Image 1 (cartoon, rainbow, N blue to C red):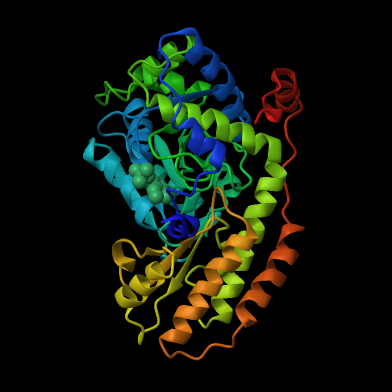
Image 2 (image 1 turned 30 degrees about the vertical axis):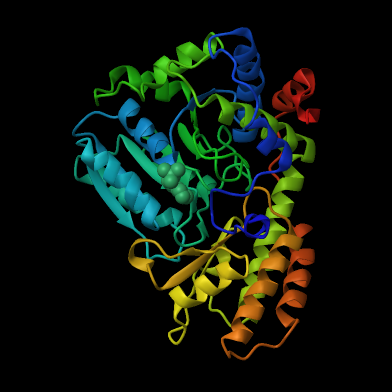
Length: 413
Ligand SMILES: Cc1ncc(COP(=O)(O)O)c(C=O)c1O
């Protein structure tokens, strides 16, 4: 079992660092009491630094999908025109939630495996305007977990802003935020959603959403029904150091500890580690003979999708991998049976990627496929070295780094 835990390489839930696991066993506290208020006083500013926002960040006890639903129902009314830019299964899901609640959704569907292009988004917004349906909101996916693509959110947001400055920008950043450079305020994003079980190295159970001032104003006018997901109730409770409903207290403990670990490592180092793991995974899989699914120019550093070779029985092969201690993810939606996915986000190092590649190599050899023993590991290690030096980190806002120093949580274990 210990071996199985060591090689859980799916794109969330991710493995947990020991201090995060231990925090899951702590005794309960009153979620309306001073200990929980103190926790909220640490966690919310730490998340604001992670999101790079000075706006509100709210914690909702739900999965990522619940976070997407909260983003929809708080800011839209039935009949509102929405442009949903989708590059895969999760972009489709975001659009479906809005349709289900009665929004008038226009899809901009990008070929799976490719990123969205700013010009195409600008044209789609302009076409909606020309038809008298200027979008009330535009939905974007930061990191499309089903295809292994990271969208260029800054340029996409700028394309929307230049065409429809009044449109709200709602961004699913569930599987990228915390691992990849991101700038909520700098990019002018209104609602950003992430989930605890992804880059944050925490079990499933919490969605975290940032909400801009103009999104709060929109929520006053928005009429979609909401109760559990009423973000204003969450904001009001947060101001008193609590949540409106009973939160997953243990997951909150774990998030507090994990954010301390992340800030002690430092976001630039976290981003560089993910860049190295992403590059190692891609190079290793290529060297083992797999064809990568995503456009290399936008390949994700948190998840890699590779095509299942036509002559490989994936079900049998993945069962063999599991027997050897490596768990990978299959394809989703239209890609079921066509790709497999390797998660490399959260609590992950290049050495763990090399270990996973070694297991893959052994399983391929055992299946009688030609493998050049050791070549994939060498290629992966070289790629990791090249990548870790190359990641660019957007400069942190001076007031936010001052806040980080002032409350000291960046050095908390
Ligand atoms: C990009 C993206 N959006 C949404 C979700 C849905 O999150 P959850 O499964 O926590 O509801 C996921 C989960 O993998 C995701 O990766």
